Length: 268
Image (cartoon, rainbow, N blue to C red; front, top):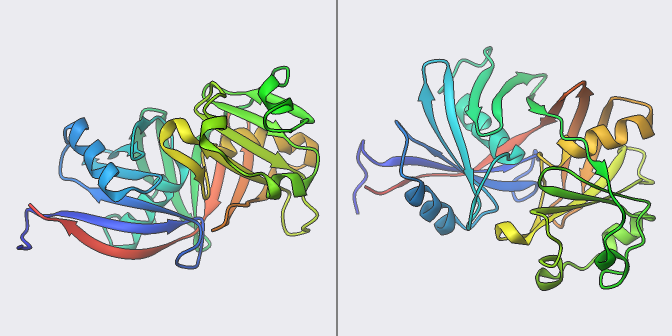
């Protein structure tokens, strides 16, 4: 085993948390140039986290791609947050300048603000649909609202405790013909405007600890209900995480913190 200048820097970061071992862990792989898709997928499978981010410099920013252990995805919030955290913390970019990420979901801009990172993401409002039969029968959920985005199903459950008590089963959830399933509800916790959980077994993730991209849908859904376009959300996984959400037209600004857990390298 040898370490050399040709080794590829690799970081693990807990996103949407100020504490290690909370929030959502992501791997961040810094490249000098683009890599083969099959190699990136193999690295993501090896890391076995909900997301591994690969980024390399361009003239006006960075190219950024995200892979779960099984597939590439078009948008990922926590791995974008983790990527920006690495670039700022390890002095890869100036702390007073925004970072421009070029992605399959267009240009995403991240900047530091009051000790947090603010991400400029596209809004993805849900379109209401009739409740799926599986929600009513197998999953025993009688939702207040069911909607869909391009890739996710949004389900507003009647009671907060229903959301906490829900037991995820991959075989059952795979019967839902969507990439991701977002469960959300009101909350009695005065610190938060709403709570949620997110499941994506079709992407190799039974439950994602904290999902920034889901809040691109949750923000537009909850803003009129809360009478406020600026909210604080809690994702109620076992690890848990806090997401600041501000809706502004067709954009959603997601705010969070992150902490580095590991620094290493892929051996050449």
